Every structure is written in structure tokens, then in C-alpha cells.
Length: 151
Image (tube, rainbow, N blue to C red):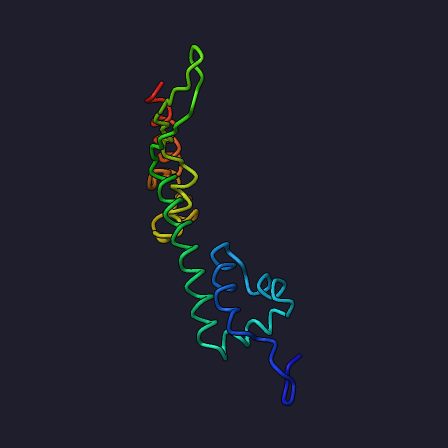
């Protein structure tokens, strides 16, 4: 533990390392393990080294944005081109196919329950008989319909 008279274990090059590790989703606990210090030391570095704090924050913001975009794409469905090299009559040929991923109902529900909590929480769907329609059931039915549309 570093106190008065103890040299800090922090090094300026930890900014880039911390940023890169946070791009992978590292928590302060995991950063501590990576740097060989405790989570509390990481908390202190964040509090006392503005460059390190910014690097960690920016790495996490980028990682969160990438995951949010992936979740959004999965929720709404997307197309992806896949290119393969095949051998046809002794010649290599490039074959490109478009693979379509239909909307994912679970991703939709997760997104809406987090982004529109008041309208889409699990409690909002538990209306008494004759109340509002069961939105989860409607989403499930819509997802199943979208999956079957391509068949």
C-alpha cells in the first residue's frame, strides 16, 4: 500500500494499457489484477491521475458504444456479407452470400426495458385482465412472424 514516504506504483504508460484493457470491458478489479495492485489502488489512480482517469473512461465509453450498437443491430435485425473461396473444377472462385439475421425479440425487450423503462418494464406488462395488451407477447409474436417471413 502506498502512503507517505512510499513511492507510487503508477507509471504514465499505464494510461494506454488501461485504455486498451478497458476497451475489452475491464472493471477496476480486473485492472488491478492486470497491474498487480488492488482495486482500491486503481480507484486512487483514477482519482489522482487525470490522464489515467480519462484513458479508463474513454476506453469504457468506446466499449459500451460498440456493444450498444451491436445490441441495436441484433434487436432490429441486419444483413452481413460473407465471402468464401471455393474450389470449382480445379479453379478457386470467390463466392459472396448475404446472410440475413432477423430481429431478435430478446434483444428488443432488453433494449426497450433499459431505454424505455416506464413503458416496457416487466411490471408494465402485468396488467389485470382486460388491461393493456401484453407487450412481451406481442413482441414475441412479431419476432416469430419476422423469422418465418423468409421461409
